[in-house]
Amino acid sequence: MHKIVLDTNILVSAIISSGYPYRILHNLVATERVKICLSEPVLNEYTEVATRTKFSQYKDFRQNALFIITNIKRVGNLYTPDIQLDIIKDKADNKFLELAVFSKADFLITGNTNHFIISEFNNVKIISPKDYIENYWKV
Image (cartoon, rainbow, N blue to C red; front, side, top):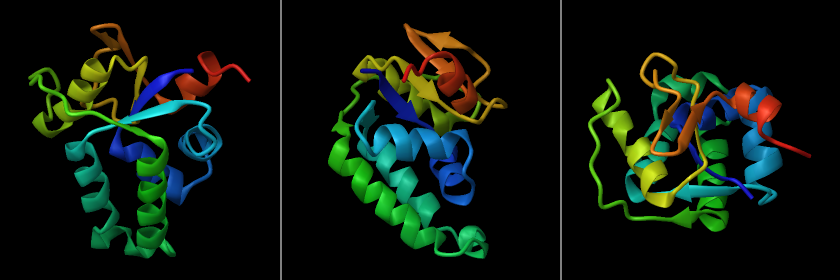
């Protein structure tokens, strides 16, 4: 079973469309076919983004996001990373890499190719949702 860390944009994309992020969140995380790694800073960002007014244009976005976060907490593993990295251009995104390295995740899945420009760090593959589904997930 793969251990994964999901960037916040995967959560957002899964709520507003039915593409690869949706498949990861609903078909793999919710059914516990992968193990999602979490930390308080990551959960805090998920919640903060879920309540942003810019997403109110999407029907029931906030309610759906909070429901998903509640379920992610239920099925995920909570870690308290004791490392600090300064690798990602957007400093706020380092928390995802810190969690992935600390938890020994197999993958950090992100749609943010502007900030996550490396493909691997400390044995963690940093990949897109499409790449994960098409190349690493075996049914």
